[in-house]
Image (cartoon, rainbow, N blue to C red):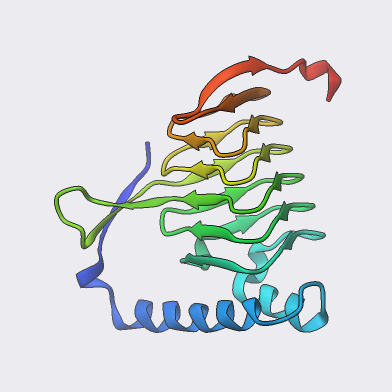
Length: 179
C-alpha cells in the first residue's frame, strides 16, 4: 500500500504559506451562503480542477491539504465534513456523503506526534457514506458500497458491500444487477 511519512517539523515555508492560504479560503467559504456565485467561486478556488461538474460540498467544512482532494462529477458532500487529505483523497463520480463524515487520509505516528503517516483514501463510483461515518487512512470504499451511519471504517469495503459498526464490518452484499 502506498504511504508517505511527513515530519511536520520539516515542512517547507512554501507548504506552510499554501496551507495558510487554503485555511483562509475555507474560512471565507464557511462564512458564505451555499449555492451562491461567491460560494461556488471560493469552492473552485480551493479545489481548482479537482472539483468535478455538478458536485457540491456544503459548508461548513474543515480539513487540510485540499490540493490533494479530487472530487468527481455529481458528488454531494453534506455539511460538517472533515477532509484531511494529506495522503490524498479521491472521490469518484455519483458519490453521496451525509453530514458529519470524516475522511482522514493521515494519522499521527504513535511514537512521534509530529510525524504523520499518510495513506490515500479512495471512494469509488456510486458509493454512499452515512452520517457521522469515519473513513481512516488507506481505505478504499468500493463501487456502490454503503457505509452505515456512525461506522468507523478501518479496512476496505468491496464493491456492492454494506458495512456498519465500530469497527465497520461487512454485513451484506447488494445485488449488482439492480444498479
